[in-house]
Amino acid sequence: MLVFGYGSLIWKADFKYEFKTSAFIRGYKRRFWQGSIDHRGTHEAPGRVVTLLPTEEWKERFSHLDETIDDEDDLVWGVVYKIAAEDVESVRSHLDHREKNGYSTYNVDVFHPSVGNATIPMFSDVLVYVADSSNESFLGPAPISQIAKIIADRSGPSGPNVHYLYGLTHSLKLVNGLDKHLIQLEAAVESYLAETGGLARPRHVVTEKDTNDLKLLHRLSQEKLDLDFQTGSLSFHQLQPILVMSS
Image 1: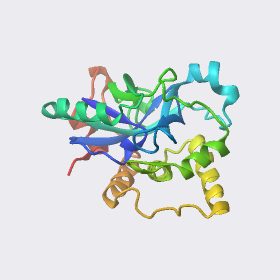
Image 2 (image 1 turned 90 degrees about the vertical axis):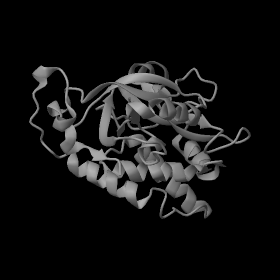
Image 3 (image 1 turned 180 degrees about the vertical axis):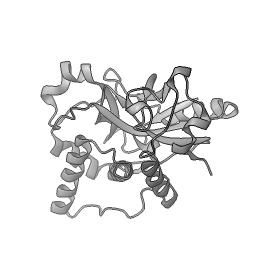
């Protein structure tokens, strides 16, 4: 089983996996539009976490309400994990519980800059958890300043909402995968906290090991692989130069 993480799964892989690699998907927008009552907020004061919006839905329903300067390339960066066959059942059960607050599963193609000039999927049928706009915890668009205030002020069982934002932006900076929504939002949160004297930026949201892994994944993304795409699939041996194995 392959799983694509675009939120906290990037730096908080609390499950067994064989290897991971940086990757991106096409045709989606990542937005802090999903309410969180079980991790980064409460029923009384929901936090905000990321979900994916199909670009076509975003254009038709939400673009006129979205203050984000648009990302024209429509890429969402994250990390792909390979789960061993004997661990699929337990990992899937764990992830279903972790993503229970409004998330459903879909399958996507994932791409890597070293594979086919990023035009040919590195993997297909990759599992991804998405909180679509019909789920009851979907909060939708709001002014960036309002979203920033919620993130700065809210907290839940998994910790302060702002730690989630910082973990995400820190991780994506390491793989050169930040999008404009996250850049604008981080700046707005920093401004709000500076004005209010709120929670200081923590030093260690992301562990040293995960930080080093992400730095390595970025270096590996510069590799140029000599692959034969006539075979119709890519072998582990072909992809090994851009993979980080589980320790």
